[in-house]
Length: 521
Ligand code: FAD
Image (spheres, rainbow, N blue to C red):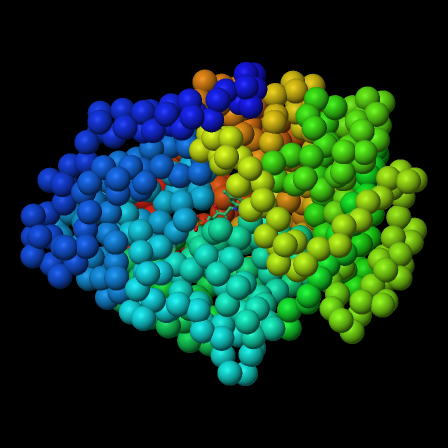
C-alpha cells in the first residue's frame, strides 16, 4: 500500500476537492425531486442548493460513500425542522430527511440521496432558538442541544466544576450523533455508554411531532431513539447526567506480549474498584508505536518498544487511568501502584503520564490537528468496529489480529481492543450488543488513500467472513449492511420491536435513509 505520508498535503487537498466536485458535477442536485410547494414554506429561505452546502452534505469522515441530496436545510430554530418533516409527510411521495451532526460517520449514514439533509450545527449559531447548553441549578444534569459538540459540553460544564461521566475518545462529535449510536470509550465499563447517561430527550419524530420523552414519559420513543441510528426522530435536546469533574489524571500504559494474559488483566481491572478508564490497543512490528491518535511514548520509550516488537511481532498495550484532584493528589500514586499489583505486563514495560483531565479527554484532537496539517485527515477511512463476545476473543485474536491483520501487514491506523460490561447497557434501547456479560470493543481504525482503500475494505470483508465461518457471534458497532437480511440478523430478537417502533414514529420512512434499513419510501 502506498504510504499516504509520502504524498504532499496540498496535492491530497486538491485531489479530494476535485474528486468531490466531479462526483457532484456528475450528479447535480435536482431541486425538482422536491415538490415545488416547498417554495411556499417558511423554511424555504433556509434551504440551500449551492455546491458548498451540497458538497458538505454528501461527504463524511469515511470519504467512501457520496450521496447527493436535493437540498440542505440550515435551520435557525427547531420549528424549521418540524415544518420540513411535516411537509414531507403531507406529500403524496414523501422525501427523505437526514440529520447531519458533525458528519463523522464512515459510510454515508448522515446522507440523504435526493432528500434533504438537516445541517444540525446550524442550530449552534442560533442557540437562543435552539437549546444550547444549560447546567441545572442542582448540578445533577445539563440540558444540551442535539447539535452540540461534546467538547463544548465539556467546556460549559467545567465552568461549574462538573462534567458528564461517559465519553467517546474524540470530542468533536455531536450529542445527537453519538446518542444515535451509543457513544462509548474507556469509562464505559463503569458508567455505561453515553446512551445510559441520558435522563430525558426532546425529539422530533418522523411524523413531525415534537415530543419530550424519558423512562417514565413516552418511554417507547426514548428507548427507540437511544442507539436508534436516527431512524425514529431527530434529537433536539438531551438531559445528560453530570458529576463533579476531576482536575487531573494519571494515565498508565503497560505492554504485554501474550494476548490471553493481556485480556485477563483487562478483565481483572474492570472488576476492580478505583479505576475510571480502561482501554487497550495493538502494536505491530510494521507500524510506529505512536500513531496519529496517540503520541504517548517518548522517543526513548519508543525505541525500547521497537526492539521488543522485533522479537514478538505483535504487542498488546493496556491503558488505564486514575482520576485525581487536590484532595487525592497525595495518594494517587499509591492508588495506581495498588491497581498494578498482581498484573502480568512485561517487567519494566510500564509508562505513566500526568495530564489535566481536559487534555486527557481531548487527546485525539492533537492527532487530528497533526493529520490535518499534513492533509491526511480527509482521506478514505474504511473503519470496522466490532463488539466481540468474551468467550471468543482469543479465537478472534488468533484468526484476525494474528492471521489476517499482522500477516497481511496492510493496516496503518490504530487497532483498539478493550472489554465492556453488558450490565451497564439497557436492553430496551435500540443499541445492539452481544449476548454475554462481557464483550470486547474492537476498533480497526484504518486510513487509506483514494487508490487503495478498497484493499483495506477487502480485508474488512475477510474479517467478517472469518467471524461468520468461526461462528463468532459479534455485532457491528456503527453498523453498515447492504441487505435487509443482514439487518434482521444484526438486530436479532430486537428486530420486531425495531420495525414496530419505525411504524409508530416514522410510518412513511422518511428519516435517516443513509442507514439503508428502511429507505424504500
Ligand atoms: P453524524 O455522522 O453526523 O450522524 C450519525 C448518524 O446519526 C446519522 O444517521 C445521522 O442521521 C444521525 N444523527 C445525527 N444527529 C442526529 C440527531 N440530532 N438526532 C437524531 N439522529 C441524528 N464513537 C464512539 O462511540 N466512541 C468513540 O470513541 C468514537 N470515536 C470516534 C473518533 C473519530 C475520529 C470518529 C470519526 C468517530 C468516532 N466515533 C466514536 C463514532 C461516532 O460516535 C459516530 O460516527 C457518530 O455518529 C458521529 O457523530 P456525528 O455528530 O458526526 O454524527
